Length: 358
Image 1: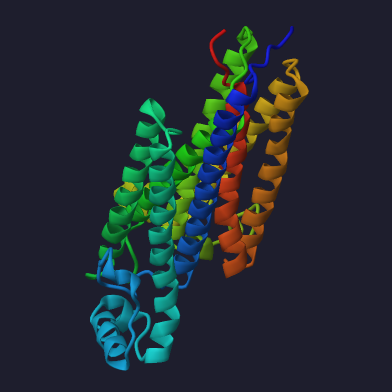
Image 2 (image 1 turned 45 degrees about the vertical axis):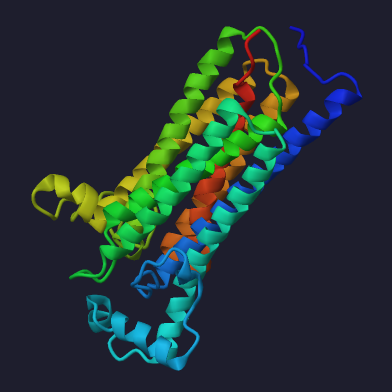
């Protein structure tokens, strides 16, 4: 089968092609910033820093406390919540500052993402490089970013009452919204960095696309379950593998009543589901790679699928090491980043199958 690559002709077309690449690199950089934000969020959660800032000030909140009196005022607010009394009773002001800064940088980085999005967006739009549906999609992503900031505050607010941590439901919502923003930015970047080729689409491509979407759905589900594991501190129970203690299936898997609450509120069940879903990710991913290998794809497209097993292996090793070493901070953060990287590799392979209409 022959492929026809559409390409700009003449010097007049060089400028739009260069602009497309510039937009693509900008969006790719934004996706990278979101990934860094996800890692900062993991550090914030693992260091119990998320409740250290109890005021939501989207604009002036970018300025940290600048005087001893202001530090003591902010610390005094923190001393009024359950986390201080039940987890950090007796914490000094210096100890409070050590957790405050993680949450502060997490919020500050979110603001920087907004600036890094808005200013180039307006510049590309004024220059005529963003028009119509493309501009609308990016504007929608910007709105999602604003909603993510609001969702982050709603999540943090859930820990101000009788809890010593944030709601796991709101944590998962916050994580999945970050994944949606990240995926949308990455997809838009790939559209500009890898222009569509015009060719007849063989039936096998439609089959592979369906399979790839199933794989992406399972990966997303696994990330969501991982959010419940994190929110419930499920990584601190049954720290052996592949068994759970002395059992293949933990005896307290359904310790809560009614039984269905275990899926959302029992850390043992969350960890078991995370292990189980990882197996389904492996099945969906490996079978897709085998099917792609047999499909007679061109070398460039086939290479995209060959990256997937390496991402899967790395993420599995990180997950097992994180569990067995009882959630050390560097490994836990790398494991969360690895989930997004595996998602990225899946999206990259799926994007290779999308083509313009013949």
